[in-house]
Image (cartoon, rainbow, N blue to C red):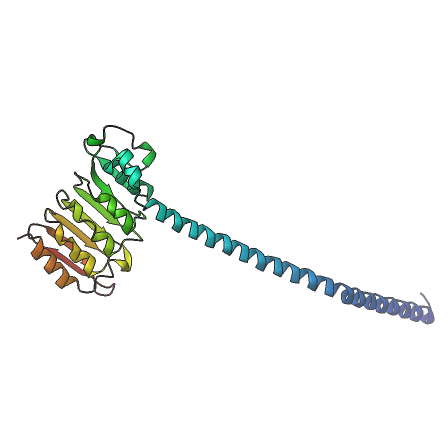
Length: 249
């Protein structure tokens, strides 16, 4: 068994070694902490900078898409002279994300590149489905001159507004069925009342148009103007949605 003095000396040596190691660790921490802080600061700065760059890219993409929609809705008279009014209107609808069906053709066309070519007088649009399409008011001028459009669906169109509906009058000689639904606040009572010009309309369905504030009066006025049209509507706020069916007179 070791002597007491020897044990005492060993304990003292271990205590000194432990103290030295603690001091060394403290010094290393003091030296490394600024470097760590600088690294973290640089990383945060880089992260913020990257976020700003991503936000710029997102903004640019949004602006580019907005410009693209405006281009797709632009009326090019020279192009209409080359391909005809019907073909130009079909290109407009399909480029904006909708679909068309040509007279005497069962297939629906969703891609303007697949519309094909043919005699201008035999290419006539019979049905238009503009669901989720980015159609804008300027593009509706392309409907002027269409001869055979019988049905049209305008559903979930983010840019649809009163000015668009006011430009449906050129279809009054052929349009029999129309749906306008889920198109946001831009469609108001004024736009719905503009449908009075569609005298041959046999069916009209309206749904989820929060911009229409007085549906009862608006629908009664519309029914009086088009007495032979069956009007179905689901209009009103979310708490008290109003479902109306106007019977043709």
